[in-house]
Structures are given as C-alpha cells and as structure tokens.
Amino acid sequence: MKHKIALLSNVNLSFAIRMLKREFEIYEGEGYGNELGELLNPDSSYHAFAADITFIVMDLMELIEHDLKEDGSRMDKWFGSVRAAVSRDRIYFISDACLWGAETSVLQDGDRKRVLEGMWQERLNALCREYPGVHVLPYRSVLEEMGFERAFSLKMWYMGRMLHTNDAQKELCGLITDRMQLLDRTAKKVLLLDLDHTLWGGLAGETDHTPIILSDDHDGLAFKNLQRVIAQMQSQGVLLGIVSKNNEEDALKILAEHPHMVLRPEQFAARKINWEPKHRNIQEIARELNLGTDSFVFWDDSPAERDLVKKMLPEVIVPDFPEQPEELAPAMADIYRQYFAKLKLTKEDLEKTGQYAANTKRNQLQEESTDFESYLKQLKIEIIREDVSANQERLLQLINKTNQFNLTTRRLDAVTLQQLIADKNTRVFLYRVTDCFGDNGIVAAGIVNLGGEEPVLDELVMSCRVMGRRIEYAIVEDIENALKEEGYTVLRGLYYKTARNKPVEKLYESLGYQLLSIDENKGEYRMVFSDRPKRVYYANIVYDNIESVNSKAVPNIFGKS
Amino acid sequence: MEDKIIALIEAVLLVPAGIITKDTRMEDVEEWDSLAHVMLIGELEAKLNISIPLTEAVDITSVQEILKWALC
Image 1 (cartoon, rainbow over the protein chains, first blue to last red):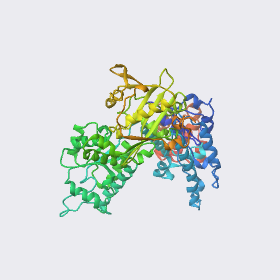
Image 2: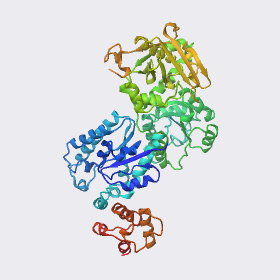
Image 3: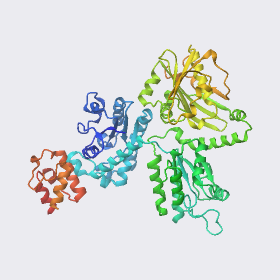
Image 4: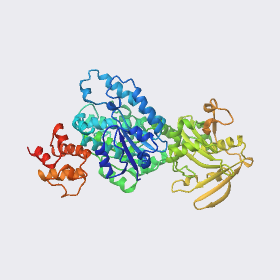
C-alpha cells in the first residue's frame, strides 16, 4: 500500500526526512519544534498534505524545558493539544519516553529520570487506549541498542538543533519503515514446532543413553531461552502447536515433567505427535483450530521435513533453522517480528490460547456426544450483548479480519465505524459467547441499516472459532427481536460472495428467509417477522451487562444514549 | 581522500557528480544551506571519521576549509 507520511518533531530530524523521501511520499514540513502548531492549525501545510500516517518523535528533555522537577503539567498540556488535534481516521505513532540531556549524566537521583519517563509513558498509553489509531513508536529501544553515545550528538545539536546523529536518524528511518510494514501485513496466527533438536536438544525416548539437552547451562540453556521467547510470544496471542515425529508418551512426559521445560502442555493449542507425514498433521490442525494453513508458520530443524512442508503446503511459512544453539532465541525473535508482531494487542489476543484449548475440549465433547443436538445442549452456550462504544477496537478487528463467516465482507476504517455507531439510522450489535468451557470472547457483530425502505442487515460477521454451533441462529434472531421491539416488521439480508465466505452461502436460507434475487455474486433475502419459522438452537441471550446503564427501549449497544 | 570527501559532499547536497570541486564555496551552490551544512558535518564524522570541532564547523564556508581539516 502506498502511504503518505509525515514526521513531526520538536528537534531537527531533517536527515531522517530526507532519507525517508527516497522511499515514501513524505511531508516536508515547516521545520521542527512546531509540531503542535502543524497538528492543530487546519490551514497548516501539514493538513494540506494530508498524511495518512504521522510519526511524532518528541525529545522529552526539550518538552519539559530541562526542568527535571516537572510535575507533569507540561506533558498534560502537550497531550491535551495532541488529543484535540488527532483525527480518528488517521494513524499516528508517538515516540515513547527517552530522557537524555547534557545534565542527565550527573543526575544523582536515578529515580527521577524513570519517574519522568513513566509520566510520559502513562499519558501516551492512555491516549493509545482512547484512540485506536494512535500507537507507540518504540523509539527508546532503538537508541538504547545503539548506545546514547552514538545516538546523540551535542555538536550537531549546537550547530542546528539536530539532536540525533546521522546514524541514529538512519535507525529511526528503519523503525518507521518497520512500523509501516506491520500496518500493512496480516499477522500469522499459529507457530508449529518440532520437538527433538528444536524445542530441546537431543532425542526424546532415548533417555537411557542420552538425556535431552535442556538445562541451565551451555547448549541446554540455549534451548531453555528459546522456549522463553516462545512462551512470551504465546502470552501475546501466538497459538502454539506441536508437529513432531516421536513416541507421544515419551514426548508428553518431557513436556509435562521435565524440570527445565518452560513450555507446558496447556500452552499448546494443538499437538500432533505421531509418525504421520507432517503436512497431513498440519492440515489436521488447521481443521481442529478452524484456521487456514496460510496463517501458519512451521519450524523444524530437519531440512527434509521443511522441504516437504514447503512443497506440499506452499502457503505455510517455513523459516530457516539456525546452525548454532546460540542463534536459536534471536532467530525466533526475528520470526516473531517478521510474521507475528502486531501494533496493538487486544484483550482477545492475550487470552487466545485458553480459548482455543477450550475449543479442543469442545471438539472432544462433540465426539463423545451421541448426537449433535445433545452436544449443543451440554455446551450451555450463553450469548451476551456487549456495549459497542466500549469495544470499538475489537469490533473493528472483527469486521476487517473475518473472512469465512462474513456475509458482505465490507471493510471499514475506524472513522467510518465511529460514524456508523453514532448514526441514528444504524444499529450495531456486538456479542460475546461463553459456554461450559469458558469465555470465547467477543466473537460476532451485526450492523443494520435503517436508512432505506426496509431495514437491511448490512454486515454480519462471526469469528470462525465459534462456527458450527448454531450461534448465528440465536444472533440473527436477537437482532430481529431488537428491531421488532423498535416497531419494525421486516429485515433484509445480503450475501456477497468472496473467495473465502462459501461456508455462509446458505445462511439466510437456513434461517428461513425468503429469496428476493440471486446471481452468481450476490443474494438478497427478506424475512417478515410474523412469518418467522421456529429455529432450533441451544443458546441463551443475556442482556444484563448493558441494561443496567440504559433504558430498555434503546439499549446502548446502539451506541446512542 | 580528497575525492572521497568531494563525493560525500555531492551526496549530502544531492547534486550531480562534478558540480563540487575543491574550489567550491558555500554560496556557489544553492543546495548548500545551513541545514545541509549540519548534515554534511555529521556525515563527515559518521562516514569518513573526520571530526571538525564545533567552533570551526560553524565557520566553514568552503570545500577548501573542509579539506584543510580533513587532511591535517
């Protein structure tokens, strides 16, 4: 995607701007130190340029005017102005705190520096929470990695208010390019791992001769550290799977009991430990998790296994495997940056593995249940209407990332969504689903347009991880009921065909909607509420959490009070 | 070294090769403004390890003066 970008700062970053100009269409501003003026003044050349991504790099020392006793008021003032200036349909990256100045090297009270940086961070995080389009630019770590000696130059500062060395400005350009890539690519979801020589050294099951290599020193520590990196990735929403040729019992014993294992069985959302070809196991995992293999990354020390997977499943990412144990952890960190890193982690990301692991249990229950209906009954599904305004980030994610259960695949940006929520002719519905195994999170949304002759369900999306439980029956019926309460008597449904949404092609038919028109790309349907058939599903709809704050007639799920 | 320095000045000022000679002065080249001058001093240090002290750096107005510092 071609972006128009701007780099604003309170110090001179001309060198970085010039370098970025080689690759991007970049705003060449009114100098530096007037970032607030440029942001706030609607007639500024910055606004005329209309950057879709704005990077704001702030030198904290300048901002607090070298007053190390700063109580936060200068920062409040700055963030107040920025808050007034940021537009909800644009993207911003604001640098994190890095307090540096000639005097910091003699500052005895080391805490003071941390306190000031913490004050900045707190305000920046609050802004990011409030505006889904505002992100942290992790600028500090770039400078720290180079070392402040190399990153800052007092001479250039004195000469032309250029605080950062040319090298530091180059690194900053790298960081900016990196952020733009994160913005444009879809993150992978699942990391599939081999066991022997990959998660640990040596071979499981040969403990009598050679215990596996996993410990607190030498090569063993290299593998342990690798696991630490993977565990951190897992806690940030990466789903883990094992695809390994081992005797399952031997491998599970190590996973569960080895004192140096960082990763434990419950941290894996899926595992195939058997002697089947790995590509078949990978396809099997895709089926279990209900995810496309194009969201998988596979890591294995064996070149033969990697080649086979590459050949059989070209859509799976298969990174190289390092030669030396000391390269394991950094190689995995690279894999994370390249394929999994996200700009923002949502609550859903942080709870993901638990949700998928519960899914596996659900599948087992399904296998045990003699028939589908009794399985659905045992699940004790509850569907909870959620407040739309409070969960906009998740709503945006659902609308823009859902492919399979997506009836019209309309993608929306944050601003359009905000307008829809505020529009009196639009109703937005958002649902959380829970069952006897736990909380599935916020997984479905619907948008009804009341602006036309008859209400139209313009958008209906549901996460693939709750598909196949007739939850959609309950949700559509709930939307119909909400409209009925408002006095409407009909609802129209739409289906726009895409490469991925075949699973919902017949949704409206199965719900008893009458077909109005159909061609190869599009179907239009209609339901008169008085003709509604009895639909069989097993789920309770719960409204408690929103009724308490709103009148019954117009609950706040509609986004208006 | 002289060629390297001249090539670096041309690269920083974004002017075609051959424009800058050892007799070029700041006022001869429009691109050589005060901002470009700061970048130039920075690049001399980063790329060629030529460190010109602040007081001299701000006073420099010609290629000759840069060469004098570099080659001394």
